[in-house]
Amino acid sequence: MRGLFSAIGVISGTSMDGIDVAGLRSDGQGVVEPGPGISVAHADELAAELRATIADPKRAEGDLDDLQRRVTDAHVGAVEAYWRETGTRAGDFDLIGFHGQTVQHRPEVGLTRQLFDGARAARRLGLDVVCDFRAADMAAGGEGAPLAPIYHAAIAARLDRPVTILNWGGVGNVTYVGADGALVAFDTGPANALIDDFLRARRGLAHDEGGALAASGMIDGVLLAAWLQDPFFRRPAPKSLDRNHFRALTKGVAALGDADGAATLAAFTVEATAAAKAILPESPRRWLVAGGGRKNGALMRGLAKRLGVPVEPIDAIGFDGDLLEAQLFAYLAIRSRLALPISFPTTTGAPRPLTGGAYWPKPNGRAGG
Image (cartoon, rainbow, N blue to C red; front, side):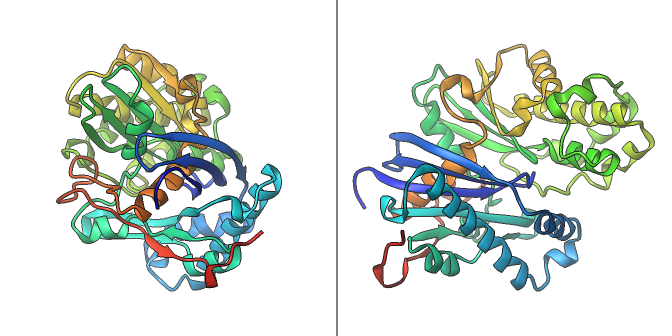
């Protein structure tokens, strides 16, 4: 493969608010031309089963063949919806990158599991597929996450640096791009997952719209201080964690009212993220935020106050913060086929720059329509 390639990226993140699909033209290096994207909501029954699986480690390690098939078919359906909405077809693209659905990520024991069947997707879509992006890194001793930094570096190449790109999805992760292009990346801790789970249980809501409920509540300082003692925050970078890492720790929030609970969990996300500044080589001049958390005013205002520098949605530089991770997996798919590295010692703890991804060619060289 040479020149510019057209790819599709697809992801259902740890927040599980839907399947994001986005197009991208790139050379897998410095040229990045985002295309249109869509988000397709999960069917309620599938989303509920995924949440139950993620919440139960034993279940997440068990036989999930049927669930994987349904997850794969949902992703295939999202791509077909993308083609309908954008007036494109498989033949317009060179390949597609699928992240799959993470149901378990425990790097401390070398375990990660993303549900997705690459062969089934390639067969149904008639398009070359790349998936399973984390396995090679973890097999070599890396954390398997975060994988966004190399794409963040391409985005930030023309910005005033040092700059930090923060993703607030279910879990938070940050990429620091230095003036010389140096990369440092790691998971910061909770983002939206704890808040979303709390509000789903209390009010049947998917999230705290705009952060309004958290803004109306009082922070429980005793609980917050206890949560911040978790050993994860004392670990050096690079580091990553599972969506459920803090579930047992934060059970005390059950004693709070809805507004105070949301406020305290939001403060936990802010303080965990702000603590990342101490790990970075230099103080960034600005923080650019992707993911659903950038729409939560309580989080954005709180982080800007803690950091004392501009904290802005990544949309401010022309990228759609709802589609950034989908674009990422289109970019990684291209890099994978070019045998370029997707993880690095300073981003995942890999022993050296590593490529990754499993390749599933379209059957018999056919392109779908």
